[in-house]
Length: 383
Ligand SMILES: CC(C)(COP(=O)(O)OP(=O)(O)OC[C@H]1O[C@@H](n2cnc3c(N)ncnc32)[C@H](O)[C@@H]1OP(=O)(O)O)[C@@H](O)C(=O)NCCC(=O)NCCS
Image (cartoon, rainbow, N blue to C red):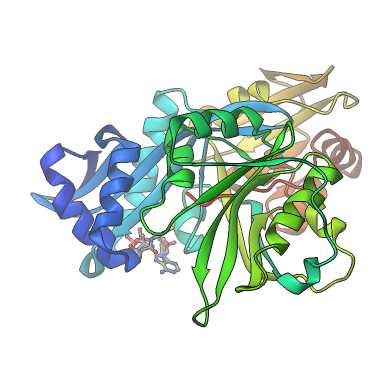
């Protein structure tokens, strides 16, 4: 029988062998992953004395309508090839879910390589990450409008300056020190960062292209004004003698794209992340809500893996806050998988009905659509 438990320090080599093989990623990179997460955040799946799988947990926050909610970000989920298809991942996901619930973590998220594995544990698609790509000559007309100062993103001083300017949008991470460290100090390649004006910044790296050229990859940027956006585009444009393209990770509805004069921009990568509500009332009460949204929604939740969720609840929203209490009429029927996308605003209640994940009368769907309407949930980084 497969059991799940915290990893002991001397079990790392056995786990990393599975992870290196599962992700085709060499061992040194896993060592920095280990250092960033801390041994206490790894779980291993054991078949008798043999380690047959494992995963790591990033402890961070995720920002929902301006408020950070504690998030467990699952990463490095791997099972030994000869043990796949035998329910190891399913057992591990169920065990981690119960553990997170017991420790009071309200939400869990991940980037799925397969959807079915995580859907079985109640995760569902809840937001996106897009990498935009643009030929650099398209930026030739942009000029710097604000002062720019280069900083070393691996230094603690620069991390402090960059993180003080970071303003997470809906669905963005409330980054842990581990995530900031990974941004400034990747295990391969170099990173370059500039502070732009009083409140903006950009962090980029070089990606190999046809020698002697390289492409510019922007890993993070914050451009709250059009002047800051145009200044960043001008800085990128200055690389065009030896770089052909720039790529940046951002939102599917990206303000930087709107600053461009012509549609030469394309999507180079498009990922979707999943969310699972671990403690449904705590997650709803902990997030922010649109100031104008008000109403009382009566829901009926079905959740085999978190029986504490099951039953009817009343969600009362007003003045940017929610109160959740058991009881009520149970008008909107919600499956466990519907909770993540409803919460993030990725799918409306009406769309969840079309996806076979919810049901209810038209008036209740309309109220739920209004209360849960948010900006597009997105994330810049992968974890
Ligand atoms: C993905 C992985 C973790 C699944 O582990 P596993 O122990 O084989 O999964 P399980 O046997 O517990 O399967 C759980 C469910 O997911 C489904 N599933 C498993 N692997 C799948 C795959 N590759 N594609 C689609 N569905 C899959 C199973 O059918 C099962 O559903 P069911 O019980 O309703 O039939 C494993 O294949 C692996 O390590 N792959 C390489 C690394 C990787 O992709 N990790 C995930 C990164 S997010």
